[in-house]
Amino acid sequence: MAYEPIKWWFTVVKKIAFIVEGGTEKILIESQQFKNWIQTFGLELIVPVVDASGGGNLLPHRIGDMLGTLANNSPDHIFILTDLEREPNIATVKSAIEHPDVKDSFITILATESWFLACTDALRSWLPSEEAYVDDPESFTGDKPFERIRVLKLKASEGKRGVSNKKILARQMLLHGFTFEKVLEHPNCSSMKYIERIFKSL
Image (cartoon, rainbow, N blue to C red; front, top):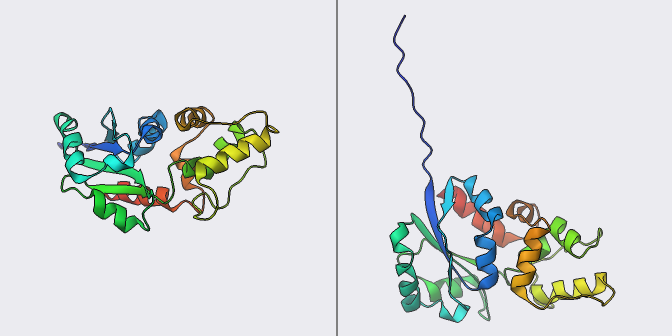
C-alpha cells in the first residue's frame, strides 16, 4: 500500500484588543455576541477591553498609557472604537487619535447606540413593538440615537416607561437578541459594514 503523508491544517487565530470610548462600547465589545461574531473571521478578543472613560481621553499620549495595559497579552491588532463627538467628519477624529501602535480606529457616525436602532429584531423585542423599524439609524438630522430610543420607548409604553442609562440599555438590548450580524442586515448602517470589512482583511 502506497504511503500517503499526513496532512495537517492549522487555523491561525489572531488576537485583537480594543480601547473604547466608554461603558456602552465596553459592554458591547466584551459581550459573547461580539466574541461569537469575530470568531467567524478567525479572531479572538483580548479582555478586558480598555475603557477610556470619554472620547476626550483618546489623545495620543493617553492612548500610549492605555496600550501598556494590553502589551502583556501580545495582541496582533489593536483598535479604537469611538464616535464623532462634535467633529465635522471621520477623518478629523482619526487624525486626532492616531497612534503608531493602533491598527485602525472605528468611528461610528453618530454614537454606538445607533447600532441598537439598526438591530430591528432586538429593538422590537425590547420596546416591545412588532412594527418598530428605523430606516435611518445613523441619520445626522434630528435627535441623537439614545434620545431617539428613549422617545420610542416612551411611545411604546404610552409614557409609562423610559430609559435613562446607556449602559443599562446596552445590557437590555443584548438580552433582547442584539447581534452584530443582525445590525449588518440593516441597509443603512455603514459603520458596522466598515468594521466587517476591516475584520475580513486581517
